[in-house]
Image 1 (cartoon, helix red, strand yellow):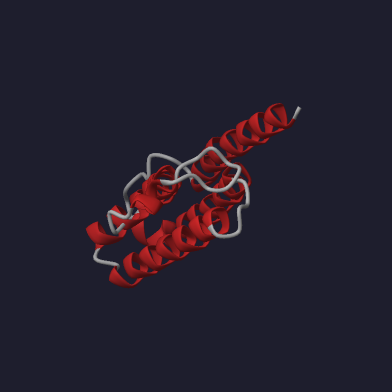
Image 2 (cartoon, one colour):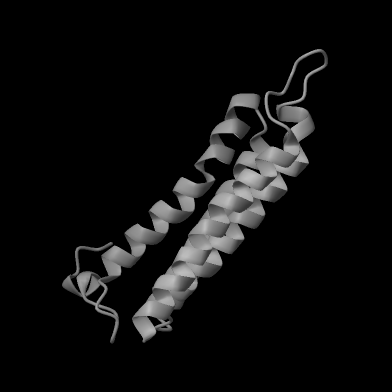
Length: 139
């Protein structure tokens, strides 16, 4: 941000300020993937750490540009971001489960299936709620 008053103005026809759009997407994207960044750092998996940051930054740039420059509804973009973050989370968990959790002679505490179902449940509930609120606002 440059401190330019135009940075704080609303997107045409949206009623949302640019700063609100930037902040909402930053918190949603980086907050949702923070677990993967922390876990990668804890185990020293710096390649995955960097990959998660690249995915998060790329998602943030695309999402904010779609909303601010193209005028696409932030709810619509947020819905697809929920789907994307869920897919990334499921991919990471399934890819790294053996390395991060399963140790010889040690109980993992939760099964991979239960973790997958938890991720699907949380993100599915968020996507369904976003869908319902989007439909309610259209009518």
